[in-house]
Image (cartoon, rainbow, N blue to C red):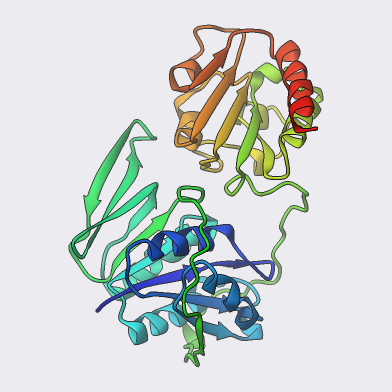
Amino acid sequence: MAGILIYAEVQKGELKKGAFEITSKAKEFGQEVSACIIGSGAEALAPELAKYGADKIYVVDGPEYENYVTEAFVQAFVQVAQQVQPAIILTSSTAQGKDFTPAIAARLQVGCFSDCVDLSLNGDKIVVKRPMYAGKAYVLAEATATPQIASIRPNSFPINENAGAGAVEKVAVSIDAAKIKTVVKSVEIAESDEPDQTEAEIIVSGGRGMKGPDGFPMIEALAKALGPGSTTGASRAAVDAGWRDHAYQVGQTGKTVSPNLYIACGISGAIQHLAGMGTSKVIVAINKDAEAPIFSKADYGVVDDLFKVVPALTEEVKKIRS
């Protein structure tokens, strides 16, 4: 067994950003990097992965892979993995990845590391860093079985163009339809001009301190001013109050995010929320309560009324970016 195999996730006919991140990271290790794309029209996406380091791209293409179905995708990927015989398998810790990764590990009869935020090599072994106890601690762990499997939290690694050979091979797999117990009729994805929170470079989140749904256009304006890689989020308190849809919730019972910049507006910083955004590169907290727990995690803190601070910050950002 040798080399690294990437599972490149497809959504709405496009490769997810995380596929480029893990391909870029894998290229740094100086080993052959292969990738597997499963989807309808997947073959057309292969050249994109080559730009970021994929030396060989295995494509499982067909209309039956239009929507993700666990059993079908796992069967297809495992057959590719058995052909490639990689020493390492990397996936993204997305909603799909959290379902897919342990399933392939079980089929290959090995363990897997989930939701890792860093990755290195110690000889021929991967060493992963992952959060534990709702983000209160981190553990460094090393695999003992092969293939070594790890899912990587989106936004953990930069995307670097470092072209690989990009050889494409279309793989014919044999799917046991009797084992597929579910049929996906449709996939409903919220339409938005903003990036998904898990892939956003900047997130501006609002909490109980927003006082109601009428306060959220203010943070939307700040996110828009910060650029196209920005989006908005919300704490559980704001979602439970009905001020924001659950799709925006950041935290242990919502989305886990790792943006370059996280701005928490009127969020107290309960442990459940910190578990979902604690790996953000830079955290800014705006809260009039100087004792709010969020300040213990923040890199920068503003103790003041967010209804004064956020509009002023938005105007200053607009001046800088104009």
